[in-house]
Image (cartoon, rainbow, N blue to C red; front, side):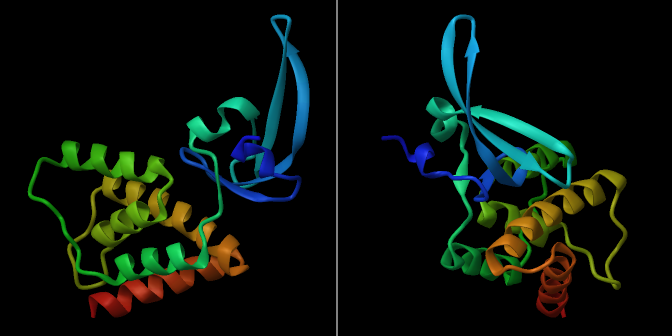
Length: 167
């Protein structure tokens, strides 16, 4: 029995490139004469429904929410010292994008930490703000689901941690 079979209606799951969604159920459909079992995942924030074949769920990176311990490690990463490499922005942007789309909360926390700017730091470029916001939203959604908070509360808590760490 595959790991994907453990997902049931109402479960929060993480799909690497879309973040936190909610399982709406599992349906069977026929495609090109083949019967396929699909996990139906709804992403409220993006108004999107994703259908992932049960057989491919593990390979696609679909996973359950992070454990509180993994989230604690991500928050520890968030509070750490920013490590911005002195490479070209285009290369760093690609690396940040890959980390965000990995679905790994620790990697996403690194992006949030590295791109965070408080009031006394120079302004960010448009693309830096876009990546920062994407990473913050992705991390906040999972943090909110794990801690059973509203997403706005999760964002506030994360930004408060960042400001304290930067002070």
